[in-house]
Amino acid sequence: MKIIHFSDPHGGGPAEDWMAYFDKRWVGVFNYRFRRRFRHDLSKLQTAVEYILDVKPDAAVCTGDLTSAGQPGEFKRVIEILKPLRNSGIPLLYTPGNHDCYVARPQCVRAVKEAVEYLSCGAYTFDDMPLSREIGGVEFIIVNTSAPSNLLCSWGFLKKEAEKFIIEKCEETNNVPKVMVTHYPMIEEHPVFRVRHRLFGQKKVLELMAEKKLDLVLCGHVHKPSLKVDEQGRGECISGSVTRNGTMMEIECDVSSRTFSFRTVEL
Image (cartoon, rainbow, N blue to C red; front, side, top):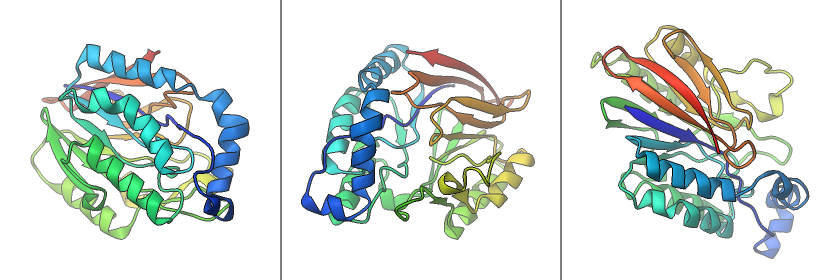
């Protein structure tokens, strides 16, 4: 079973309506205008799509932050690049990032919901999450941990209903590898220093990981790729930003032994 995991393209653009200057979007627009557009190269996402189409994995996983400020035009630009992958027949599992769920403006909420349904080819919707899909003998538990937060923070929250769903899935005795797909890392090594960017409510998930009931977490949010796994490849995989670092993670899963091996793909 082959999985290719990529994350955080951060496509951006100008403010798309005057109200953007009166909500959090101005932060994302300003950030893109003066920083992200010099660091994130969307042509690398195009290269990533071409690589995935050539390799033909059993599943492709995108763990969020398609956009910089969650605006409809930003989604449109990135989705146009992802369209050949979406239409390829390779299952594409996408969960939103905090920048995709940046504000609660109706047009922005509608844009992220449309993105989830479109990229999944209608297999699931934004409101279906949390949900599980079995592909190639692996159970993917897809969880949205992103929601609009205040002006200064990029917090994520694992809600109680999502926690309950994850626990129920991980307590099942079907003995298939269980892989969680979400935006925020579950393992936070610097909770004080990263308090403005961290996830809250993941304690039970960490226990499931320690008990080997949840085999692997695929996530983004942090732009530098990293692996926090044991000798069997169980733990957490951060693929890094595909457009900033030019990296993806190619994962081989031995379904029978529930073990994983990883290779960083340099684009």
